[in-house]
Each structure stands twice: as structure tokens, then as C-alpha cells.
Amino acid sequence: MMRTQELEIDKMRNLPHDLILGILELSLSSMKARAAVQACMLFKGWNHLWPFFSCLDFDLSEFNSGDPIQDKQRFSCFVSTMLEHRKAPKVDKFGLACVNLCEEQYSLTITQWIMYALQHQVKVLELALCSWIGSLMTRWIHVAFDSLEELHLRLNDCSCLCHPVNMTTLSIFPRLQRLNLHSQRMMYGHFFKDLFSRCPFLKDLRLESFIVPYSSIIRAEHLERLSFKNCNLKYKVGTDRRVYLETKKINFSRLQKLFYQGKDLSFGWYIMVLISGCPLLEDLWLESFSVPFGSAICSPKLQNLTLKNCKNTDRFTKIVAPGLVSFCFIGLIEDAAPLVHKVGSISSLIHAKFSLHDNSFDSYFLERALRSLSYVKNLELCVNELTPSPQSPPYYPALYNLKSLSFCGHCSNYVIYMCKDMPNLEKISFWPYCQHSPWFFEVLILFR
Image 1 (tube, one colour):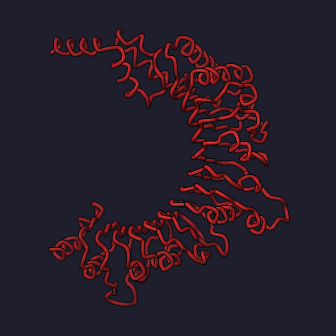
Image 2 (cartoon, rainbow, N blue to C red):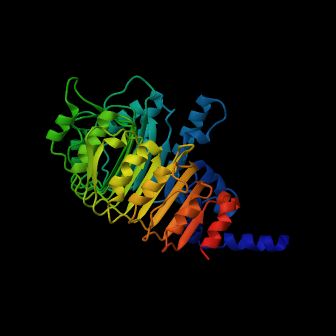
Image 3 (cartoon, rainbow, N blue to C red):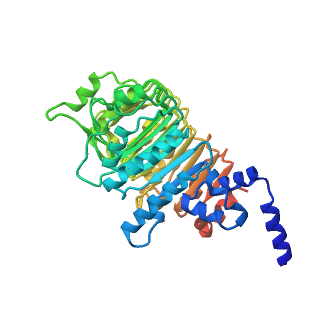
């Protein structure tokens, strides 16, 4: 047995250098840099392979001995030593997470690490830094960003030196296609204008925890995906926010996917005006969204609409999406009820999902929902418990187009009444705990 294991190890050691390196790159790509180097030390024949890694991910949290000062020194020494002894000509991915490394003595060192990656034609750059060190970095780095295709920048406020995010100090990003920014600071007035002028091919922009001035985001002709998460809008006191936004010519002519998560009502006005300026919008996801008065979704190309934990949905005056294919609602029944008729009347709708958080609700809603969703072919329902309606037994309309039904919840024998008027139903799915209910076997008999 031992002899067989030794022979297998010898075979692994004798593999070609490029093949071993490719296997290690594939298996260790999700690991941090320190763990990847330790993995190379498992075999003596692999000790020389770590300098050839093209994906580097340095994380200060790997050094956790209990002494913060010593951990920072060890981390700084590890990163500098590894970069000094690297032999690979390029860096495909470079990650640096050192938010707590905010002392001034490390600012120049961090900048040198990032410059090393840029000089070695890095394609993906992921940075999580202290905010004021990030500001210094943008002023000191003068290396061309010719190879960079993806940038993730997270700036945490570790001090009171919180200046607005500025892009004018950075060079041009001729190949940057995806940009992810996270910061609890405010953007200056012309941030987006400078950003898009320096990133002519930017297609995917994701912003999180930013304070955005009203006049910033007006047009982005090449952007295809846009995401806002927990962002707020800043406006002048006394300004009519809706009138101000509607007078601006917002133009996102190529935007296809829009994601918004947040509770800021001012940003809600911006999102609704933005939707009207996106003629090619296909996917729309609104989460924790408080619908402003008089809102409407009018998008001829919209195919997928998701509303999660949205409030005041009765304020939607209309939903015009002739190409809508999929609709998903997650939340309370009081917010789902106003949407059923508006969405259900769209003849192109094929997939519909309702995941309701209410502990119990009257089955009358389910009856009305099914009556409105007559065009749907695939329906997924997730409810906790249905209470009897005044009408007994419940009446469910015939759904001739429905072919697939997925059910999750304690709905007693209501499922039986639903399935009786679905002549073309081909597939029905239950969550595992539903299979132990007595009505589950009655449904099986019904389908025979």
C-alpha cells in the first residue's frame, strides 16, 4: 500500500512544469496568496512553483496572531517578498485587502504593490483599502492602465479625512469594461462625466454606499449593466426633485440590466426617470424599493422583472412591457395584490413566481391571481398557509396554458382544487416536506 502511494506521488512530481503549474493555478485560484504558497510546500518538487502564479490575492486577515502591529509588519514583509521573487511575466488577477493597514508608513508601500501589478499588465484588480490611502494612491499612481479590464475598489472610512471621490487624478482606462466601487463617501459633481470620458468602453458599473449628487448621472451611451446598492442622492434644499429630474435628458441608450437596492425615496424618483431613458432595458431588479407616487414602468424590451420587498406598489399607475417573459415577486401579499392584474394582462408572460412572507392569508388572493395569470405557462408559488375563503369550496379558474406548477407551503386541499382546472398541466413539483401531507397522494391519483 505504501509503495503504491509513493509511486503515485512520484508520478505527480515528474509531470511537466507547465502542466503542474496549470493544475495548481486551477485548484488554488480561489485561495488567498499565503494559503496558496503553503500548499506548494506540501511537496518538495513544488517549492519553486509559487513565483510563477499569475493570480495573486493578498489578505491581511490571513495574519491573525492577536498582535495587530506584528500582523501588519508580517503581512507587509510577505507581500513585498513574494512580489520581489516573482518570475511570471504577467499578473492576470491582483487582489489586495488591507483595510486596517491605514498607517501613513504603509501608504507608499501599498502604492508600490499596486504599481507592480499595473506594470505587469494586470487584467483584474481588486482593492479593499483605507479611504484616505486610496485617495493618496490615485494621486501617486501615474502608470498607464492599458491592460486593466476589471476594477473592484472598496474604500472604508478609517479616519475623518473623507474627501469626495475624484477620478481626474487617474489615467485613462482604454480597456476597462467592469467597474465596482464601494465607499461611504460623496462623489463630486462631475464624477460620472470624468469617469466615462476616461473609460470609453465601460459596460458594467456597480456602485455601493455612495452619496451621489443629482446632476451626476445623466448619460452613459456605452453602459450595458448598472447597479446601485444602498446609495443616496444629494440635492439642494427646496428643489422639486421630480421636476428637476424630468427636465434632464437622461440617456442610457444601451443599458440592458438595471439593479437597485435601497430605501431612499429620492433615489426612487431617479430610478423611475432612468427607466424611461433606457429603450433597450431587458432585466429590471428592484429590492427594498419604496415606489414614488405616479410611477410607471414603460419599457418595450423588458423581459425579466423582479420586485423584492418593495413597498407602496399600488403607486404604480401602469406597467407597459409587451415583451415581458418572466415576473418574480417576493414580499407581502398587500404589496403583491396591486401588481397581479397589471402584470397578468401581459400576453407574453410565460414564467411567474410569487413568494409571500405572510404567515397566513385568504385564499381569495390566490383565486384572483390565477384568474389574472391566464397566459402563464410556468407558475411557482411559495406560501406559508392558506386560510379558507368565504366561498367554500374555493373556485379556481381554468388555466389552459399552464404546463408547470411548483408549490411550496402548507395549503391543505387547495392544491387539489387548483389542479382540477389545469387540463394541460404536464409537471407539478412540491417541496420535500409537502410530500408527507395527506393531500399529496390525492394529487398523485388526480394525475393518473
